[in-house]
Amino acid sequence: MMIRALTLVRQPVKNLSLLMLVAAAAGACSINPVSKLPEVTLITVEQEKKIGEEESKKVEQEMGLLDDAALTGYVDAVGQRLVKESPRHDLPHKFHVVDMVEPNAFALPGGYVYVTRGLLALVNTEDELAGVVGHEIGHVAARHTVQRISRQGPFALITNLVSGVTGFFVPVVGNIVGGVGNFAQSLVFSPYSRSQESEADEVGQEMAAKAGWDPVGLATFLATLGREEALLSDGPRKPSFFDSHPATPDRVKNTTKHAKGLTQAKREPISPSHDAFLARLDGLVAGQRAANGIIQGSTYRHPDLNFFVQFPASWNVDNTPVQLAAAPKDGGTAVVLRAVAQGNDPLDGARALEKASKSTLPRTETTTINGLPAARTQVGDSRLKVDLTWIAHGGMIYQIAGIGETRNFDTVRPVLQTVVESFRPLSPDERQNIREKRIRLVKAKEGETVKELTARSQSAWKANQVAVANNLEESDRLREGQLIKITVEEPYAGKQQR
Image (cartoon, rainbow, N blue to C red; front, top):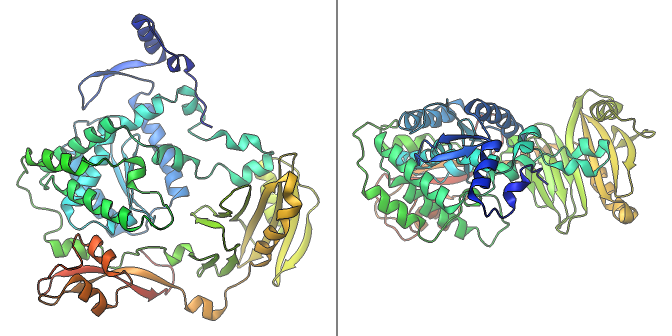
């Protein structure tokens, strides 16, 4: 639950002078760089920069940045060219690629702008990329991210946007769950209003046109993203661009209309041709990266860390740079796995937790799990219990926390222990059989359809996915030599870029 302070503004205020008095006491009045209208904000520019810097560290930790200097540098070059046309010039901007499967883009206060590799996989032109990045710069320019924080009150700033969920648990459990993921869900994925979306669309398109890109690119990409959402609508729901940027039936139409009224400056694109743009995406992992570990059904395999773990078949599994977490769909139980220390003594994991939580753990017993040194204990209170296991493997100490409600913990504990007992090194065959999908470019033959090219190239994407990813239809006839993005399943050769 986010702490809120200015409760007065949440009550009906009939007297306008009283409202202005409360606003004056709460923060300063400034002119919005985009709307040119006065607004009350609790946050100065310097505070905005500080918040953005702090929260950007959480994005890197909780989501992970793509370790691809060339692709990140390209996105930054597009962003920096757009920023020069922004109505706001009091912030330095930084642009990053998030190592995230889902297609998304977001901005933090202070000019931190992110696109995911899942989004890049769907982009087909530099104009489209400029439209998306320009849209996010538009949110920063119009202070939309700041306005969201301002509405939460100053206590939200003091607590640095961290959820109070850990307050419900004993200190040890609080350290285990750590509030990880709360930031991403609360700030990154909380939606903008329809008026804010329209404003960011227009500002982004205007920046793109002034910087030399076709402003219709944003509308084109929104249409592609809408098709992608529809294509995946029958699968598990994942976060996407439309979570924080709500889609409306007329949004593509409005952005297309607005683009027609803009004049595109005559400037050379950063990528000299369409083929050169697509070449930047060649080799990009589409879907899960083996370097982050692969979830296959209810199993998890990490080739570089060399371990295997299995969860109950019906559980949802979530993999982040910080931890691996799994839980049944009805909640009430969870398993959280993370690396907590280096070394070969599993008791070092218990010592690390005691130090971090400033608590003394109950008696910890040593054991072995699948031949690996391990240690176990249990903590809890009247509401929750946690089985803690530390396993030493490959020079690292892994902590597996099985969490459940105290009232029925004896019932769920066997299930939690089954997960712990499944932890083991990978077999050579398991390691060699790990594969990942990478974007590759295929030259079309004259007159063949997308469906025919998909079959000929043995794409891991189905024909409808290839069509959407290339902004085409399955029945479209292709030109000789036309480059088409497909995906190819390739063996994982070891930790590498992209």
